[in-house]
Length: 370
Image (cartoon, rainbow, N blue to C red; front, top):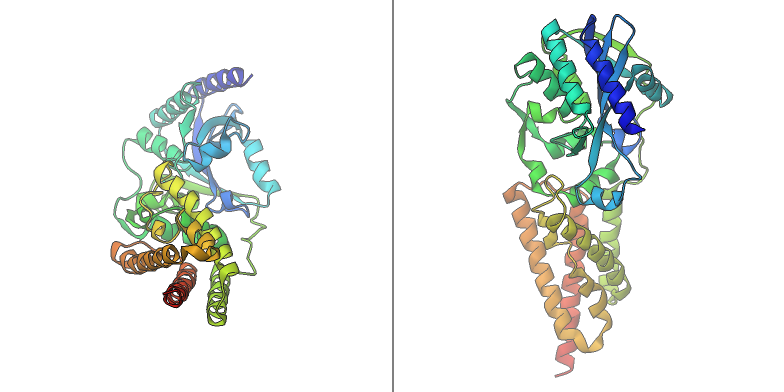
């Protein structure tokens, strides 16, 4: 059935070139779900004979085999589909999201080139592509087609004085826990300086940059932005400070084994995930990740060893090495330009406090046994 729909869609686009056709870029403004925070882009192609279609490079199938594993490992495949513009606009209207249309100044030859390129993209063997969050997505694909059609770059390669991570933080400002997760999972590859063109990985930024070019002749708006970004009542920073306070309290009281099992257990689980992302995932900037110095599978030893009375020497050496790695991380991160989420530092400090406390405890225990 999908194949039949694709064949019919391609046939429609083949007929579009025979009528007066207008091409425009549609940008849905951000929504409340985390996958909607940068907006969404579609390419609209309509003619004076009543055909009006949107090409969407953001279609994916949750029910595809091994979807979760493929998503985590960076092997998510997205698809290119075309369907009536009415459906596109109504779906965002139902979500309370405004859609901005930018009509493009293209001559007949350029319009035909867009139609030809879109038709090629829609072919069954071409419609699936390997999605990349910042390099190959629903915004970069239509931009590439438009630039191929006009035969020149539309966006500047001059420095944007920002990074991928900084841009994400800007769009995720109302979702600090989401950004916290991104900062954990993705390494310093997100912290390299990027160009204005690269910053347009976000649909809203692509819209803003195109507005300042000569390619846009008219701007229209559909619907009204009725929703804003959600806000969290508790931030990662406030919670991490609370963890640090707990670490100091249990250290002063003398027995923090339950705290260690909780803290280092979570650190170990997180470390397994980061290790997977570094060595298996193909996600952009998942490797290298300096946080492995802090969060790694060996943290499981910090959760288990304090409960083993005969392993005090091993425990002391583990926490000594762990503390040294935390110092290396604190020095290396700023030197290597790895941006650190503000909430990381209290958690790292809590780790250091418990490491020192356990080193002193083990040393005293070993002395009393000699």
